Image: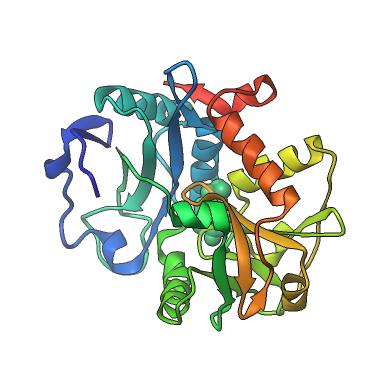
Length: 303
Ligand code: PMP
């Protein structure tokens, strides 16, 4: 991790090395926090823009609401704090990590008497699944770990503790030599990757699991759906089973960290080189985030 100068903590800018918490911080023990992952890009005209920053801050507040975490800052305050943070750190591009969590003061499971602390950090972060992954595609495996269920721990929110589930799947996949894991829900339908949504293409139709499958309502997923439709593809949100992945003409992952990454193999089933739909959607996405396409300029929130 490449440190920068400032981190925003509870309304103040503190030096990177001073952004510390107490070991008895409630969230460290129980994972009771919600977070976001956002990317900022240097656009064609040299200005820095955070991609769909307001949508991410809205999702942060909604994640909090689903888990009774009352974030003491409005969406607009969080957006402004992020822009100021990027400016102060003189960043041209990078990853932004807002986090709202139960702080120090009370222990025990009931968090409702704990203060909710909020921080926003940003740092330079390159490609999550590597240059080769973006170009040639990644190898994914179906995880033996199931995605969390709506009636166990709602997976529609980005809750810190829920990511232990993703971490187990990621370790299992990488230890077996794969790049990424694909998680099924408890009914055997495809949910998503450990931190990406999943798409397949078959006979020129683009499919992605519906939100009820237990995937996150990904913001890059939404970008990919819009781009695919604008390119003339039919996009269907429908339940998928593992065989749909094995028999797909193309498959790809979408996520803020990963961006848009082709899948070239699923658990030993070869899908091959990135296909035409994947490549076209990738191409439009990468042009959009550089500010090269007017149709998608509302996605860019200049700092
Ligand atoms: N699914 C999960 C489980 C995730 O953690 C993420 C990353 N936030 C995504 C999908 C992709 O969402 P987004 O495109 O908004 O980053």
